[in-house]
Picture 1 (cartoon, each protein chain N blue to C red):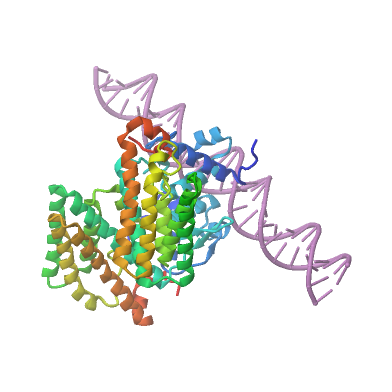
Picture 2 (picture 1 turned 180 degrees about the vertical axis):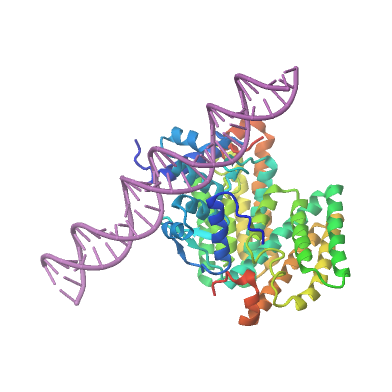
Amino acid sequence: MPEEKTATHAQRALISLRKRILGGELPGGTRLFEVALAEELGISRTPVRAALSRLAEEALLDRAPGGGFVVRSFAVADVVDTIELRGVLEGTAARLAAERGVPKAMMDVAHDLLRQIDSIFQREAFDMESYSALNATFHRHLAEMSQSDVLCREIERITALPFASPSAFLDDQSHQAALVRTLASAQDQHRAIIDAIANREGFRAESLAREHARAARRNVEFLLSHEAALREGAASLAILSV
Amino acid sequence: MPEEKTATHAQRALISLRKRILGGELPGGTRLFEVALAEELGISRTPVRAALSRLAEEALLDRAPGGGFVVRSFAVADVVDTIELRGVLEGTAARLAAERGVPKAMMDVAHDLLRQIDSIFQREAFDMESYSALNATFHRHLAEMSQSDVLCREIERITALPFASPSAFLDDQSHQAALVRTLASAQDQHRAIIDAIANREGFRAESLAREHARAARRNVEFLLSHEAALREGAASLAILSV
DNA sequence: ACCCCCCTTTGTGTATACATGGGCAGAGTA
DNA sequence: TACTCTGCCCATGTATACACAAAGGGGGGT
């Protein structure tokens, strides 16, 4: 077997359960029982509890009133609201960056990331994997430019939800061709946000970052409007309850 | 004080540890050891672990890289940023409420809360405890008017931090007299926010809610500018690292 | 026939013993 | 003196046994 498995049982359980929740195999509302999971995974209850507890931190599980854990339900409205929230938070990061000013070194990194993303568009075959990675890095860097640990932390937290990540629907195989066309304009927005920050235009930076998140929202709504066919290919949406 | 010890050891440990962290008795950066805490509390490691895990969910503890927990450090900048963040989130709630429209029943509750707060100002002796409670209720209701579970959840999460709560510095004994004067204008802002929502003025509602949070920020900055004397009385600030 | 009580089942809470692994100190050597 | 290697120690990881509380079902009483 691929001996890659991480050290502790708790970590393996965490990874395994997370995958099953995100994959929709454990639908929202499912009560998770320690004993059952322990037997299933061939480990004792203790590491299972540890894993469940961490999944609750990740907001994938809710604690049931009398103890125990329940898989959190995500409706379509929740996905939309979460993306909206990411837009608001990234907008705040952009505004704070503009208002507070960004050290030159950090600004250089931002421009470098912009250039790297540009270069992807210039190759013949579009390398979605590289774009997705660079896009994630750019967004992480944008958060850091706010120079607010608190804000970074919350953005990271929200972004950890699979459907709310800035690169959420890029890996989905179903509609890449249609998607690539929209990425060029996303990159224009990236550039505009950095420009606004450089010019200390807080309001403009915030507005642009919010609008940028709307692209992800349109993406979700597009995927969901085409029911089964496209939705099958959208792994990030497997978690949806309805 | 009705000594209402809850059922389980884990809950008692949670409460005890939370109090000690918030009270500054366990300063930021302190590593918490399971065995030591277990002995200290006279219980076994298992419930201690459970309590630590929940404190990590509450963002009062960080998980150390190699396992274990460390008390989170809050600098002044973090307090300011957290309050700013609350303003942003409540602003978003207010905007969404305005954009999406609020059911009449909910709007009635909001107006009723406004009236109840008004009535506090009309008594001779200002009842800070009642004001504090009503203020918290009003802010919770404002979040709910957004009709977004995701947003409510995040607001509640941020608001759980002692210094970020809308009623954070109201209970502090030291400067109540000076404080009461500002509360009347806070109530004006409450009214304006609800008015904006009723008129479906999203931008105005958002701006007002943000500005409203700035009052809390000014409060912190005032308390901190008067060093020891006032800060002693501000229990919410005991957690501060510096 | 209905209701109440008890007993069993099931799930989490807790204690404890043992495993494991990383870091540090001390000794031995170049 | 500096460096490294070894072994101990401490903190967390894991398994397991037992405790306890809640819910459900069956049996007996009225």
